Length: 443
Image 1 (cartoon, helix red, strand yellow):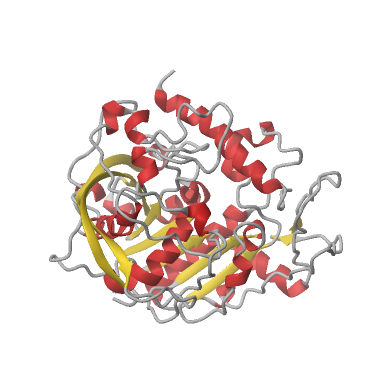
Image 2 (cartoon, one colour):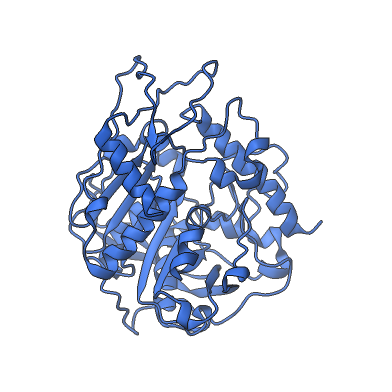
């Protein structure tokens, strides 16, 4: 069996463990002007990657884009990147000031899925910071957004931004039987294909992400000659934390992205680290809460599952009001990892309770559409404004067993014999239900 196929089979188990981990918490320039100076460093994307076992990505759901008139290609991204250091202590309001620090050469990879023909391209590129919490590069936002990306003709680019994805390293989610691949990195998983890659450490990840964005705007080989008009940064979970740090400290310096799709963030950003180091995600959780700054022009849609709001991610402490550049969408009855992310093996994963099947991916598609419209037109439609927040219940009190609304249909509740340390909040007021249905109706 090829390494590529082994990786897919193992990742099904890895994502299953991640889903089980959240069952107990609720299972059942200043913005961006779209410009880039030729004097600013950009990644070299001219070298296409071939050989080995083909493109590797940790996903339970195959991309399968060719049948939709798309192509999948993989390229080296290389250059010299800077790390950053704050010039003043980091404040909770997100109004951070960074300056470049060390520099180091890098040679990572990007995975591109784009329309084969220019006439089918919308002009929007979604650039996903690939997630490495399982010790592998994974594309959870692509899995959630695939149908909307293809329907609209958007391009998608996954960036191996972090050290673990390339070189290997610590694994936050351990799956029995997955030790052979978890934490090994691309270079070990498929040395024939990825052996020449080199990553200088997570402190340089933010500038690598910027340099890839600049290169994509140049309509080079990686874009097949397509001309991007809008770049939207996307990231889920650990990658969402990276986007919090990026937005607050790096976007003001670079203006590299036109909008931000932040999915399942925690109450903090991803820490800055020194050369050769991994971002200390576990150590960062529980530190001082960090809001999105409100003085930039690039809009943010922050999508949170119910299990993100309380529990280890604790995003409830960074709830902030909607503004001209910020929207928070919280979706009742949904989980950080769910049946849609697990794909065809969801029913085979034994978590002691049914895997959450709340349609978060539909709301994610609606949120992406709204963000794209927001960036293109400068206006966010009324249906995306003032989404009601979920109610929190006081500690020790169980919520009334009302039906939770998601798209107008009740979600299956966990079996009562399963003990939940956190009582899931609910949306049980008609206004909130209507808002949820409106969001789902456009997906």
